[in-house]
Image (cartoon, helix red, strand yellow):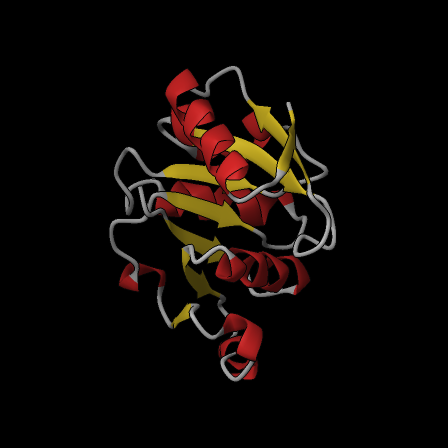
Length: 159
């Protein structure tokens, strides 16, 4: 399967993940609310295959969404509550949090079964370790999908 990944957040971690996925020829999309972030990185040769989006709604048939927004609980909660209705199953929602419980982040979601913590260690384009944190709501099929994906891109999972 050729996965399609949407990264939400174009800061240090989002860009590092996009560079890493680009090396594995993963079809990658990146969205940030700040248009200057997008324009600044469009010329980066390490991101030549990444499709930068002006709107989340420009992404279709996404398999995995990786959120890399700042570590502010309300931002993460609002984001997942918003995108939940935009992307149907089997899209898996991943949060790169290193601070919050996955159940806290998903507290505003109607269906928390697709939310998983995937804490990529920094810098994500170099460090091979990813901490995988399912919540008590996460369905096993979504966890399995993420573990297979991480294996495919040669990330070591700590689960």
